[in-house]
Image 1 (cartoon, helix red, strand yellow):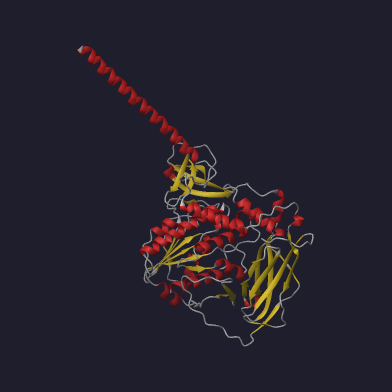
Image 2: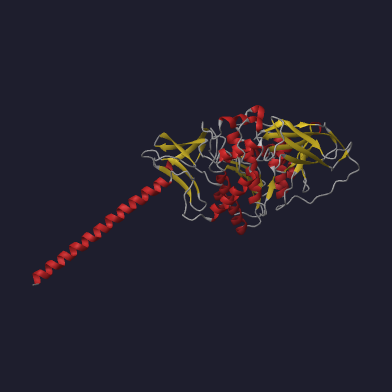
Length: 536
């Protein structure tokens, strides 16, 4: 009897062991399936797969995209002849005068027509309006109101005395705008990223990107909090941590049809609209100029935000002091920590500063290339100025280091901040080739980082520099100004109620008529002068 009990106990132990083993194997297989599923998720068409339910930021992104989508005309066309024609459209002055006074408003009515001379029935054309007096080095943009029926109102303020010329450019017809918006949001592959990994004494190059459509094993560089991600194909037997450098090149991918591409040929971009009037003569008429308040943080930025006269930028909403003497600039910057975060249009600033402050010297950080970190110091006056490029996407054929690469949000988080600390941020140019959700996510995350900064250090000064307009005939699908204009509107909307300063470089570079992503030094100098007015 005892032996039967012993045998029974042994059988029970064996059965228990087998049951545990079966459960263990099942969990192993489940884990393998789960890991495999997670790897495959990296190769979807979305830049980042998060939770099943959309997060707060994803809902915000969707809302902003939908808002912009409603503003964009969805206008496919059967023939180029039915698209907007600058040569056939007509501009007429409303209530013309023989004499205009300084400060008057000049209103112009635009009636847009197609290449057959037929009146357009819908709006959405991408227009650029500007007045100028080259001999006075004067210029200003105009406000364009779209009535969504093929007609527009263009309003200018006549800021200066003299002969004023009017320019009304059709940058893209509404049909081209529709095509560009659709093409932008169709894919992430208009730019190819190549990552360089260290492998002992040699280097290994692999494909990288915001999204990679491949079944290969990937390195995922994820900012979990901000849900920002970047990927590289993992080199065999090389750690993902060995990524050292990056470069890009334009791919041959285009989401425009052959017919749509004809709208962006050089002869069809930035065409002057026919006018039935000549230059405008503006007199003084004993007008007096109103004294505005000093430029300050949190100001509402009007349209236009300013104008140029004798080469100087003059804001319309506030009073600007000219910092044109080295000792005045030195006193302003004394004891200041200044962080420039963004693209090469802010790198122009740090290269410009030594020309107006001879005591500023570059500190060697042992970096290489144009996109290394730049630092200027004045030890006697305790001035520190730093430029660092923003994180992915950064588009350049030149190899740049990834060793201290960070998103702007993380850079802001590391700054303790105080009343003598100033941060200048610009985003935009490098985001133009990619779907708009990438840009919106980044701007929302930057706003959140600024809000965290203000909680721990409300005296820190933050200034946003808008994008510059750029070359008129650059590759439109990737880098054209229509993409920049949409980003400009989005950035203004997201930051509208935050206590930051704004340098409206978009409006400024239109007024100067630069049409260059890197404007000349006199424009850079006026951008910096606006910055100095904010912090001093």
